[in-house]
Amino acid sequence: MDEQQYLDAATAVRPHLDALLGDGAGDVRRRLDELLARACAGEPVRTGILRVLSAHEPTRRWTQEYLATEPGLREFAAPLGDVRIPRVPSFVCVRPGCDTVWYRFSVSMPIPECHGSPLVRRTPGGTQPTADG
Image (cartoon, rainbow, N blue to C red; front, side, top):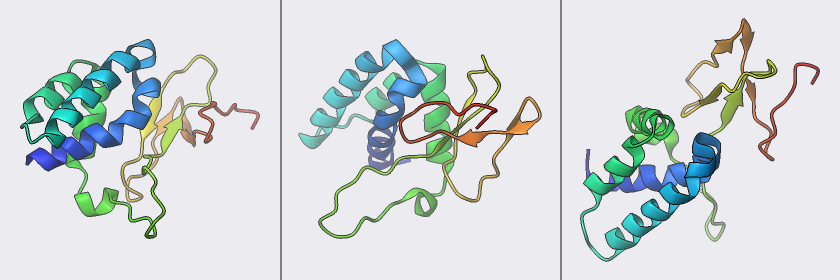
């Protein structure tokens, strides 16, 4: 894997840090921001990004899946002049008390089940749907 793939992973995971790490997200976001700034200055930061993202199981898993997904399936091309950060859709279990969150890195990935029911897409505001709808 080249340096750019790790830079892409660090950029792509940022919008998901709160959901992945809760209270620990701020520190990881700050460390990633520092590494991304150093990369802009021409420093190699692949090892640092790997250390930061591997320090917590949720970000380690997320990064492994992101890097394993074929780049053409995860890319997003917005219309010229329309700048957006692509978001990886997340799915959650509707069972009360279950904190299962799954990220769909490609539309070719089937949505798994949890407690015998398919996971449901998390709403844009980040709220978790209920079994009642």
